[in-house]
Length: 464
Image (cartoon, rainbow, N blue to C red; front, side):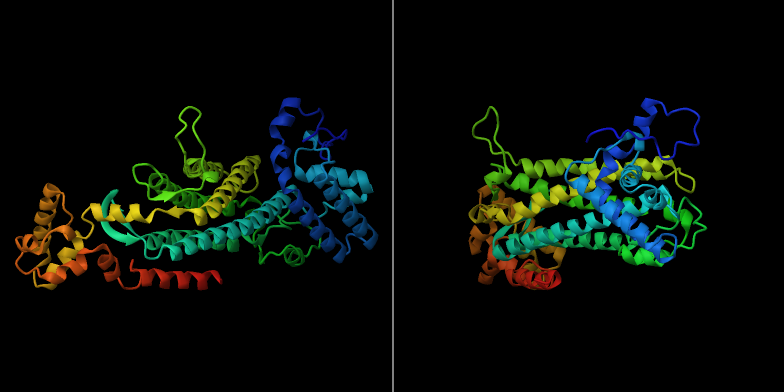
């Protein structure tokens, strides 16, 4: 970004001395709010059309503004625009350049609005655009999860509680659990977008304006669903930024949990999956290492995004109505949150479909931890034992298995009958891993056909 326009501030007439150079730099937002240039120009074009429709601008003036703003946008996108700290922010930079290009007509553009409602409009337009991009990345991740779940619908792995082997589940079922979490995140973001999509333009500084503006027209031109109904709230509300940050914190919490599993599963101690080399890095000293850097970094990004949510909550908690300079501090945490959410989602959406599952290892792990113990307890309940009694019987059988190094399914019928005489040959139907997962054959269960049913519902939800 280059400096400076040789222009005086457009708002300098009130002051008897120039702004201190340090203060000028300290208070300027152009080093970061320049990224909203498209939205600022978009809002100005809508405002100009409205001013012409109510007779404040004539057609010649409107045409000049449209042409001038088009040139400004082209200069920005070609890297030819000189950003000026002296002009403080995105709004004044663009207005100053427009005025330089088309003369006094450029100064008429600001009639009936303030930088307060201008920035409130810009940031809503910006975040709405970014939300739409994030929704597409969420969709991509969901598609990847569904495809992986379908591919591994009958792949058996241990399910864990307390990170201890609990019961066998299918890998596909596990992936669909992540799908459900991301689905809730997506719905939260869609709800956030609905509340975001209100137009503050026309609120002016805080009280509205005396000009005969048409707020409905500008709202429609900018694609807003409704108009902010109170001018004080319109310029000072940043709930939508906080809500987006709350969504982001929840999403990153989910991605961090997912990352933790991928890191564990790809380790030499688990060897459940193989992450493609393009998502990993090596060690500078240990040539054998293949580090899961992408999921590790995503796991780390969660703390950064959490911090931005707290920053925004703290920023807003003590502000009186209406706009205060504090609100300038909303953009950097919001922009960084947007960037990190998009990058983390892109990484996961690219990585998940490429995960290779080591089925032999997941099967062996499920078999080694007495994961069918609950199935044996349920079997005994079916034979007429009270659950607490069956629980004790199975506990004794497991203790014997630990002592002898045998899984329940590897014990002889005679051995099992030594713990309970009601056990018969059909017990082996429930002690196998395949029998265990197939028995969970109900809506939401881990049985392979239920996983495929969940995949089918997910595809319908995703409109695939």
